[in-house]
Length: 183
Image (cartoon, helix red, strand yellow):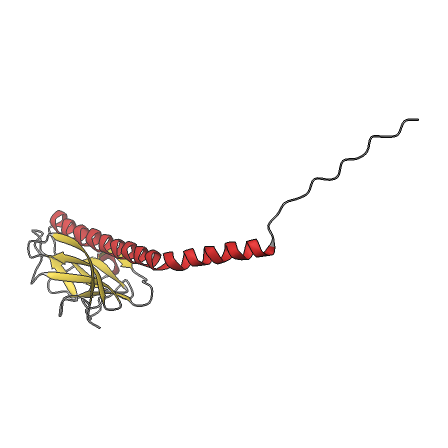
């Protein structure tokens, strides 16, 4: 009886050693540490752009509603989505509502046309011009009073601004300037 052919040695498995894995993780950690500030700046720009777009859209909606309804429509800061707050901070949200003569807040829940909740990360806020807690659009689409400026801030850094002039036109600006926001 012939002998079976000799068996070949099993193939040697090649893998990563512990040292190679640790060096790879160290290089990956260094790359992440270098890229982290750029990621934060990118997130800040995106959050500011989102806030600018939300504000611009709702302000344009309020103006259009005033023109279509032939009624005064107001936009104001609101923490609860039902009542206007008398502060210059729009950092918790705002509402668009049909404003009766000299109304400083919606008369009924049905008068609210749109509400926007804004839950920013810590240190973020939206600050209006001094003494301008609300904006009123007249029946012809003009904005009553002086220009309104809403600044979008992270800590003391101005990242964006939405401006409404007396004709009612909404303008959005991109900024990245330290010290442009009051505390």
